[in-house]
Structures are given as C-alpha cells and as structure tokens.
Length: 213
Image 1 (cartoon, helix red, strand yellow):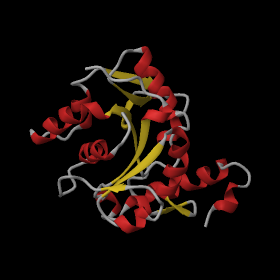
Image 2 (image 1 turned 90 degrees about the horizontal axis):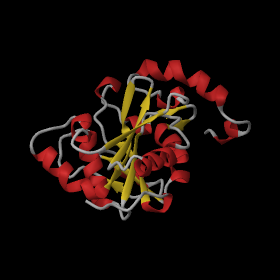
Image 3 (image 1 turned 180 degrees about the horizontal axis):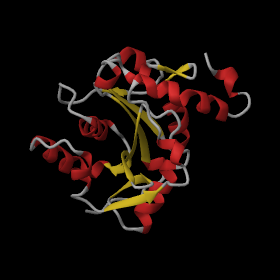
Image 4 (image 1 turned 90 degrees about the vertical axis):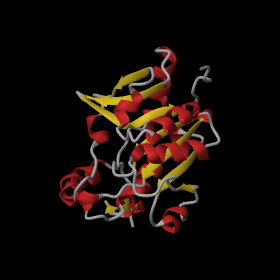
C-alpha cells in the first residue's frame, strides 16, 4: 500500500468524545467542566493548530458539540463499540489522507503530537504512529492513514475491539514522549479532576486564566 507522507495539511484532527464513561457515572466526559471550561475545549485548543481541520467523534449531545463549529461524527454502529468505532467513522468522514486522534478527557495533550508522530512515520517507514509515555502506550494518541479503513472495518466486523491488537496488524512507529509525561494525564473518574485541576491551572500561561468562563 502506498500512502502519501503525512504533513499538517494532510491531517484531520479527531477528538474522541463518543465513549460511555461508565466510571464517570455515564456523564458525557467531553462536556464536563475542568478549569472553568468543558474538557473538549481544551482538546480543541491544543489540537487545532496541529492539523488542517477538526472532527469531533460523539454519540450524545451532538448539538452541544456541533456548537464549536466542527463536524460531529457519530459511530456507524450503535451501542458504544469503543474508540476504534469512532476512529472508523472519522476515517469515512475525513477529507484528508491522515487523521490524528486523541481522547477528549486529556486536558493538556502534547502541542507537538502531530509533528512528532508524522516525523516518526516518515523516518521509520511506518503505516501509523502511536505515542508512548514511559512504559505505557497511549494507544488513542495516534496518527493513522484513512487508507487503513478497510482493515479496521474488517477487524471490527470480526468482533474485535482492542486498539493495540489492530495496531499490531500494521507497521507501527512508537514515539517516546517521556519528556512530556503530564500531557497524557486524563480524567477517568470524578476524583481525577480534583487531583489534576490545581496544577493544571497553575501551569497555564499568564493571561489564560482570563479566558476561562
């Protein structure tokens, strides 16, 4: 398979906000307040400068997400089938050759995520790239070509759901982000927000506090 090398102009950013959020009591995580703003706004702010355009993958509150001015894409299959289902729907909706995915519940993703993943794809002759922080793979912080949509569709049709298992079918570049460990902190449960919010606010650049509503 021949895939054009990724560049900013050929990448659509995809914010994954379509989960069921059981540990959050079923609340829509992307719309939960964090440091004065819904979590999805922090993701948009970080991801938008890294890509040519954005999509939001969501299965609830579509009007609320649509108010941000970006296309909102629901899973092709109902029933909260996991992040790969959202990624497949985003592949079908994207008008670029690549998508850069990240979850909605991480308020401070790396500002150079796209650039470093794209560089790794080119240098390692990989089909896709995934961030790694320490010993942990950040599987949905990934740069993926839409040309792999058929592979992903077949994987899901076989009843598979695990992201790493699908990645393993392809040439994967693992990119070390151990220099940015705080960028992969996420909010899986209500207590996570209490733990992360004070340090997050303190680290905001001067003047950013005024942007919070």
